[in-house]
Amino acid sequence: MTRQTDTLGSVMRWIAPLALALLLVPGGADAQPPMSASDRAEALRGVRAMADCLERQRTELSRVLRLIRESEEQRDSARDARVRGDAERAIEALIARAGDVRRAAQGCVRDGFPEPGPTSVEVRDPPPDPSADAVAGTGGTVRRIEDDAALTEQIHVVRGEQVDGQGRVDRDVIRRGVRAIAGRLDRCYAAYLDRGALEARQLDLVFTLRGSGTPRAVEIERSGFADPTFERCVRTAGQGLRFSRPPSGEAVFSYTLRFGRGA
Image (cartoon, rainbow, N blue to C red; front, side):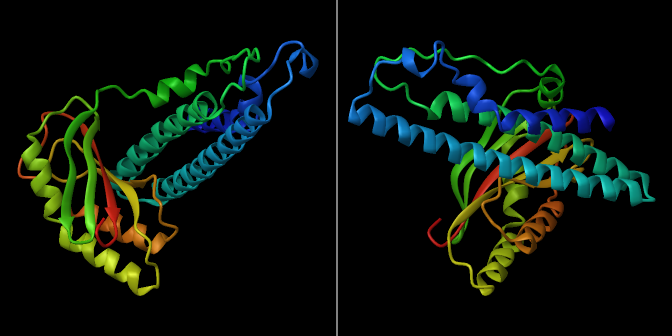
């Protein structure tokens, strides 16, 4: 686990200086021609958008680290070998998520900062981090299961995908299994509304199948809800997923679910 923790630490260290590392301008400010008012306004919008994007990634990485700590505590305190194994799989999935955050933060800089006018900007990639890339790249290709589908009146599938693993199972098997927990998800959201929240939000329900039709690991990722009780409820509902046929090998699925009336 020391190597995994060191990898995540390295990810945290580069987020703060990432913008500077990618936006160094040779020759200093004096080498830049004057900007027009419109170019200056556009560049400032880009800087603010980049800062907002990086802050979101910092928040997400902090959440991932918190979940890793919780999973480590579960692993270290569990007496059952299967529970310890599930905790290890959760840690591995969270490490992969940290790699996703790394790439998203790089995109914040590449995509969120416009080049104002004819100025000359040298874009330098951050130093490669082989250890982070190694844990982030878990193999497999994305396979679409479904998208833009209603589960209930207030829950909508934005997209469902197999995001990792070489195992294969019929798409209809996955769709039927997810729909079987729609009622439980609806009750989670009803309880959330009873606590006074009204906005439509979304999250990713991520589950791993290996060797059986019962998930070996279930996680909540990229949640727009600041409500741990709701997230725990959705995760518990996900742990109740049952599929009539297991995949031929390990397979990781991610369902982006949007909650809200008319979602």
